[in-house]
Image 1 (cartoon, one colour):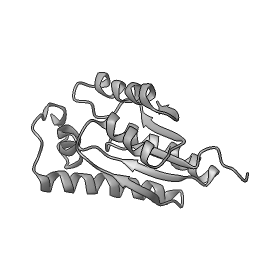
Image 2: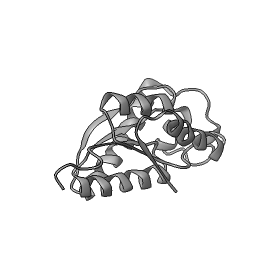
Image 3: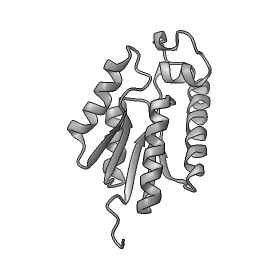
Image 4: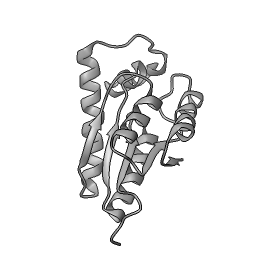
Length: 152
């Protein structure tokens, strides 16, 4: 196929199993379409706590951890993501990890790299469960100028 349907795929990664499933789906597509993968991780207090191994009560964390903790958690999440991509023989074309609203960051990345597809998990590490992450995938589908795939 000379002109792949999905040349650039953006994936939202928060360290949850759901987001790793989204990444695996994106990698599978990327392998088939020879696409480039861009990963967006937007540190939130609860995603940082979770990535640093706080199993119980991570969703109740509201204050942003220290810069060092944020960096360590982000490195952990991106390293795990690179490991998953490696299983598919792929590398990330780019990563973005700014604090802020995950919807805004994912949309900004998609627009900057002229993405053809955004892949997210339906539920991730929302501080009040499905409601928050549901609004992330919903927000992306409302604002995106490209195709969106929400992985269950």
